[in-house]
Image (tube, rainbow, N blue to C red):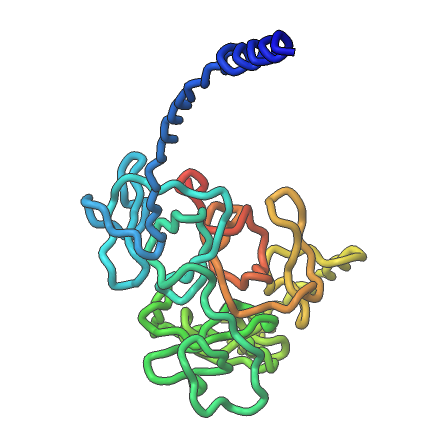
Length: 320
C-alpha cells in the first residue's frame, strides 16, 4: 500500500515540475507606411468674360495682331483689349453678342473681338398689331416711330424678317443723307436714306407699277427735210422674254424672289439656291455670314437669304 502511494506521488511530482515548454510569443512586425499620392496642382481657368487684357499693343480684333497672338480682353464694349498669348480655343462655334447689337459666331473661348456678353443677343418676340407705347433697345419695330431717341429701326432686306431698334452709332455702314427709292412691304414706293431706310422693305427700287412713265418724244423740225416736222424715230419692237423654266426659281438673294418667298438653300457654294416659303420662322436676331465672294455680311440667323460658305466672318485668307 505504501509503495503504491509513493508511485502516485512520484508521478504527480513529475507532472507538476516538467512537461512541454509553452510556445514562443511571436513579435508583431510593423507594416510599412504607404507613400502619399502626389497631389496635382489645381488648374484655375479664368472665365472668358473675365479674361484680362494682356500686356501688348492695343487692338480691336485679332486681325490687328501680329503672328499667332490673339486680341483678348474682358466682356464689355468699354474695356481695353490688347494682343497677347492666345487662349485655348474650343472646336465648336458659339455665339457672342457684339457691340454693334448683332450676334456673331467664333470658336469657343476665343471671340477675337469686343463683345457685350457670351451667347446670342436677346431674342425678340413677335410683332404686335398695336403700336408699342414704350420701346426699349433691341425691341421689334415697324418704323423709327417705334424707337426711342438715339435708336433707328433697322434690319435685313425682305419682308420675312423682323426689324429691331438699334443704337444709331452702332449701325454699320453709317446712315447717310443720300436718298434712294425702296419698295415697302405694303407695296408702295418710298424714299429714304440709302443705308438707313428706317422701315422694312421688299427690295430697293420702285415697286411694280410705280415706275415713272417714259418721257414723251417731242417732234422737232428737220432742216434737211421739206416737211416742217419730222416724224420721231420709231422704237424697236419689244423682244419677248423667254419664259422661265418650270420648277423653283433660281436666286442669289431675296430680291430675286416673289413676295412671301425667300432665297434659301444648303450651306456652301456648290449648289443653286431657290425661291420658296421659309421652312422655319425668320427671326430678327442676326449674325455674320461669309459669302461665296469672300465678303462678310449680316443677315437673319435662320434666314440668311443668299448663298454663303459658312456662318461667321470670313477669314483673311477667304477675303483675298
